[in-house]
Image (cartoon, rainbow over all chains, first blue to last red; front, side, top):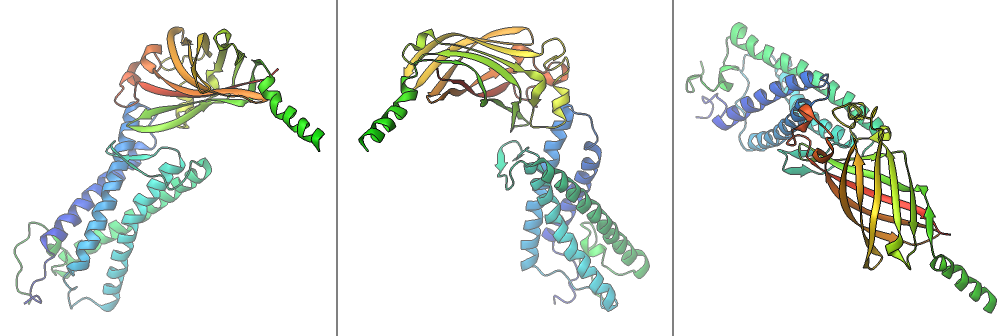
Length: 186
Length: 182
């Protein structure tokens, strides 16, 4: 019975798209904000960016826990082995980066002497003491990880579209919230 | 043996016998502050300041303290803010390079603690402040304590910066002001 059920479950789908939206918006925010001249607006959006980053971290932890108990549907049998392996590695790397990016941002904030206070209420402890040189290095690390993740996300989205339009399989639709209920695999 | 014990006792009693502290010891002094932006406390400090203390622990009410802080020596804790706060909206350092504290009364509260009243002048605006300071005696004696001020009282951060939901109105000042014993 579960063989014919090829969709992700609704919670996995909801978490996937929620995390995707927050990551894309927060990436854009990060690119936009870092060159701004100092202003109250800049201080505000830096805080929002950090809150969003902490949220991504927690949502991804939730996703991973959920995934541990809800195995994703198998990849189409038509996929060559190298593609499956590439997809697996890509997904692992994405999970790794979804943790590494917020962690690098948090460490960078600590080293630059500006603690992260989640929604202005919950202080996230500083693991590092203030250290400007280290903070500047972590800034580079945060940036590099982000652009690395952006490249993999583009690959991920590109692969999904390729599956949909070229391979014409259900790899994309099984993660879409609005696609039809599970259909029998051919 | 007996002589060395007496010597030790004498040496120990020397700071206690030193009846007055005066002048200023910059190395043992510091002036720092905690500002709050978006509910995040950020520590900053001033690198250059000078002062003058006269204090006799046996006659504390006659004590006095004056402190001048060079505002251009600020380290706000946020690198890009160090330049910003020199502007007219913040300290207007070109016109008002110094913050000055001048004590008006010293009242002993017991247990090496004193209430110090005085005036604080920043950016041409003068307000009364009161702070409780603890005194540590020694070859160099020091008062340390903290107090809070409202930056709006001194017009620090005007215009767009007057929005206290981003940069809080209240700023905590922490100090350690030292002077040698004579």
